[in-house]
Structure formats: C-alpha cells, structure tokens
Length: 253
Image: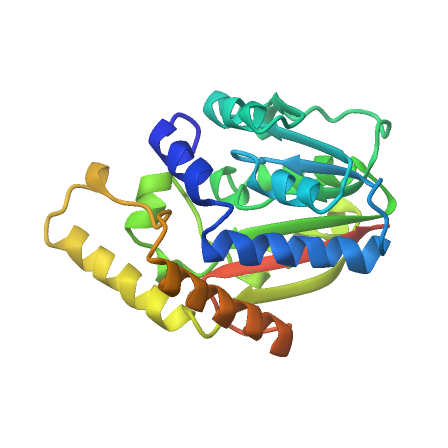
C-alpha cells in the first residue's frame, strides 16, 4: 500500500475498533502467550507494521520491547503519532545481516501480497534469521483468489494465497511450521458475496481507480456481532479449511 495515503488514514482511524483487526490482534497475542506465557519483556518485531495497530494492542497489554518497520512514510508517521518505535524500511531492502540483534517474535501480517513471488522465499529467510532459536514467526495473509475484489485493487494487493503457496517456504527458511489455518469460515459467505458484487461492478464498468477498500467501520451492533462470530469460531474451530485470510505460525529451528 505504499503511497496510498487515504488507505493508511482509514486504517489508522478504525483498526483498533474494526472486528477484523481486533480478531487478528487477538490471534497474534494468543500465539505469544502460548510460546512465552506471561512474559511481557520479549523482543517483538512487527515487519510491515502499517499504522501500528498491532503494536499498540500489544503495548496496551503490557509488552514493553516492541519494534516495527514499514516501507510507507505515511504509515511510519501514524506510528509515531501513537508513540511507537517504528522505522522506515521497505522489506524488499531488508538486509541479509548476520544473526545478531535477534528477536523472540517476528510478525509479518498482510505483507506477502506486495512481494514479488521470486522475492518471497528470500524475505521469509531474512525474517527468520532475525529470530532467536525457539523464537516464533507469525504471518497473516489474504487467501483464495475467489475473494479478489475491489478491496484488492484499492489497497494494491497483487496476490492471494493458499496453504500450498506458503507452507513449503517454511523449512528452507529454517522454520518449523506450527499452525496453518484459514479464517473466518463462518463469515466467508457474506465476505464472498460482497467481493462477488464488487467484481460485478467492475465488470459493468466501474473504474478500477475508483475501487473502495473494505476498511471502514460499520454500525456498532454490526461490528460487534461480526467480532463475536469470529471470536467464537476461533475458540471452537482452531483450524478451518476455508476463509478469506490465512494465518500461519512457525518456530525458528
């Protein structure tokens, strides 16, 4: 999304309230708790941190050693407004540095869709090299081309993924795959309906440069209902076969 100032503005305004972000942040926090228990001093790197919603969420829950990087100057500016330790760095330029200055957890959410296919294995290797042995890697990505719609055009997303695209990349990067699941299965039906409608609008002549993203806050009761549905699914169905997002975790060997 580099250069899409309006999209970063929308993200900054809603990501601490919108059901989708809330559920994603809870999923990430659950991984950290499973791996590190009640420790709040672990070193966490959010690579491609956007406007800092996840880092803010973790800070509010007591995590004290948080670092972020993002390739968008707009995103970094918003992060600094939140008082976060974030630097400007395009992940395509992430150095293949020696294994020093290591982290306990590296998170890279909804970034892979902007990375060229031939560069993705390199990026994953370089992110994994920033983990201590036993450290945890977390990544969430948009899933299934079937869900492609105006949202993808609006945010500049190039790809959608299935498990077979990403799981084989973990072992060569030095990561043991621990979790791989799509989400949200229950809400995939209305999400798909909206995306198919968006594609119909494009087919009927809506200009692609007028495409709208899905980053907006619905009414309070709708937002809370969607959040509760996604939350309940995560509790009852920790692994599902379908959904608009793909959530994976790995452990540094």
